[in-house]
Image (cartoon, rainbow, N blue to C red; front, top):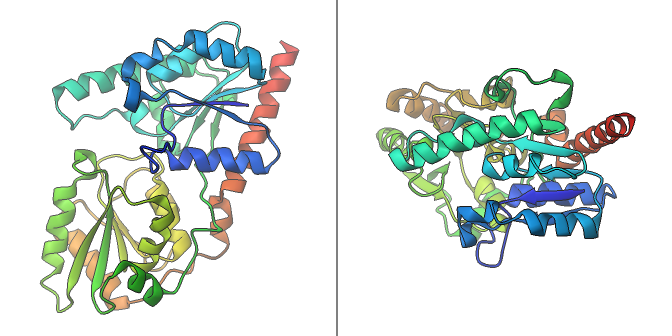
Length: 332
């Protein structure tokens, strides 16, 4: 299988696209031979998508994959799905590639809308489609055969994301053991995540007797993320839109309580989990739900539901999908 992606860890950006790397690693653990074809948009700019044709066909000729899996939508997916002479092409859509980014200024908004147009075009051209959350199905547009779509959320590495001793994690990070630590995961300044709302809610929470600390989980090496999630008291998420946020699954695996607005597949993920709360996107309600977590002062016990969140579970579903597509391709 050839994995085509525009986000993947590199020496210059080791935290970029870790969730893609973990999916590739899980597929390899199942015995699949996977080659990664990285289109480094960060380094080469958007024109990398239009210059990739010769390199892509060279890799396909040399590696001879039986599936090409484009692991994000947009221009990249449209360019690959439209190329003749390739094996069956699968495209995974993660969220903003179908929902757009409408809060980042007019220039980014226009680029984003073009990206959504390309995603929908790629969805029609591809042999198979993966969406990571159910609500993204509505954004694919009409005219797509249901049998070529699969709902497969990205899994997580349960060997790394697991409950650890909170005191030891806080000691390693230099966090005070007696404070109430709120973790907010966001790329710095991303308006979709509503960082101002998060900070305002934490400011309101500080009226409680506890000393509250706000921690922005941004640019943290992936190896350190389990420490943060085990050291924290609550994960706060108040995004305007999401696909299937990996941080939610990682928090559940580490036993970290979650307060989130009803966005993406979060309501489905935390349904029935005692200690997790959905909140309205208001300062008062977010602060109130975090105060409930503070007063309860407990960790989560998610039980068997964690196995369905594993990278291995997602990889098994992907492998089955690949086999179905290969069988259908041979019969055509």
